[in-house]
Length: 390
Image 1: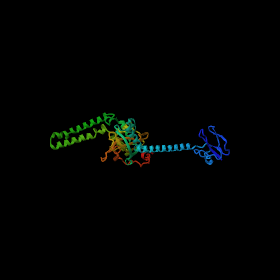
Image 2 (image 1 turned 180 degrees about the vertical axis):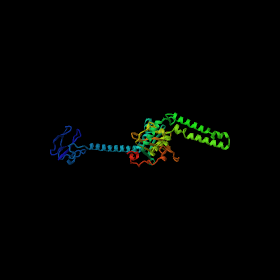
Image 3 (image 1 turned 180 degrees about the horizontal axis):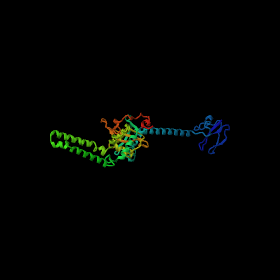
Image 4 (image 1 turned 30 degrees about the vertical axis):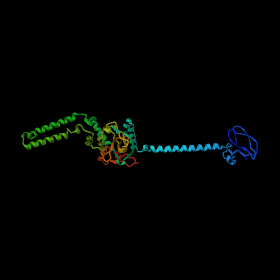
């Protein structure tokens, strides 16, 4: 049988053999000497004896005192209360910050839209130019929701070969003037000579016997009406012929419409979109579109994203407004513009919807155009059937 002894000097509790009562023993910690009590001696009330089986579970002769056990219990309660306070503070913080928390979207279109809106909020002009072609961006304070409308997605693809051939002919015959957005002949004497020849031919026809001059000289009402009608036809022929803008100062759209041989349907839809938004395409490609001469397949994608934004000039109680972003992506062999924001406009409730950047040429999309596949499906790479190559 063992006896539990508490050192009166260092308050260390330890076990001592109880088969030799009255024996003097030393404290294993401080070395203080103690005399074991007699078999019928009483222990102090503050240090009741402890069973051997209970003490042996600790695997050591040192047994914590009652005061030590009390301090350990209070420490555990303090740790538990502190942990609970941290959890409660974290929960309250999460609830407060939840309206401003926006998980990062995995959709590439929505991610570009988010990056562009973040750049608008921060006023980062360099990032705005990296994600958009807009010269005058909207002024917003914050945004909450971003949603891509897949029903408005469109993709046009096909072979660029017919457009490349047209661009080669344009480069050989015309020079582009960006200040007027038109092409001028590299040899202006050619159109000038044709115009002079046509004017002199019309003059000779008017001076012939029975011509316009003779009819006007006779002065009879019917002859005067015939002369006026003949003169109108002469001017119309000149205006539609050698003096036509498509011959002297053509636009890109005029050259595409009058191309011989004609441009393929899908490529013509792309060219029409470029003609309607020449400045945006200039910023998108960093070069004029008519300088592209690659003859491989192309893919032109269009998408729309709606965001709930708060304007910088809005009051604190004003509801957010809808900002619609138009995004495009163009790929042609080694060219990939990535998704870029080309237009940002506000959608007013109840107002009639105006034609947008992506809707401007949809009415003319031909069979070569196709709607964008549902979310989660990739766009098929153009095959030999699309490109016209073996």
